[in-house]
Image (tube, rainbow, N blue to C red; front, side):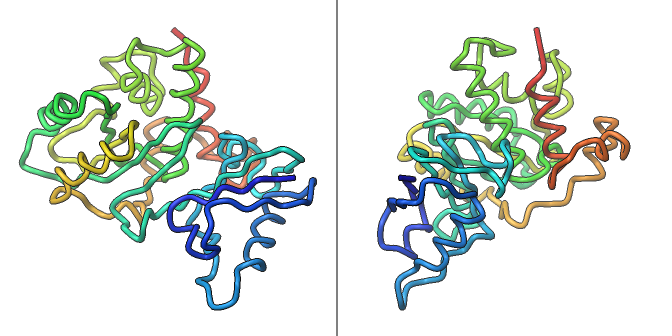
Length: 259
């Protein structure tokens, strides 16, 4: 049996937060088709375009994407990219942690001071900011956060603080100073704010900075900037057999960083 957990707005199509499927072998693609065909009459259609799929806590894009095989006993989490219809917040579930990302627009407020103020006001929430042009898309952000959380669990972080580890992995750098100067917050840049902690606390934090928020979706196309910044060639990308080679390469560069 495969257990499907429906998070956020994905529940609306089924009026349930969990579905059990007796089929023992199927792919993620098969599962999504099955769910689309299982929506009760007069209920909203099941949107497969704006979701992330995690198998036993691991993003399917880090496996074989929609071709990932599911087996008996697997737990599949369906996570909406757009949380509650609000495009300024994206709710992620990563390795059992609650995480959200929002996008901060350019502001007259010093972003470093803002970040420190938020950390002081919400000490139980892990908070980090990254220049938005260094984030390829939402799945890229999710994979970097997942790598850092996994490193934290295994005791192999690049820094003694997980928020610093996250920054270094977005920068693909082993040097904290380089990571800060490259991808750290700056006044004249939009930024992606990453928050990990209790949902209620993150909700209060987001409410506090709501006037500064911009829509996260659609995400800006940072492809050319990122390829140039990290000196990624077409030849490198052509060697990767994947539907999302640039995202996979960035995740690989972030994962293999060593002290």
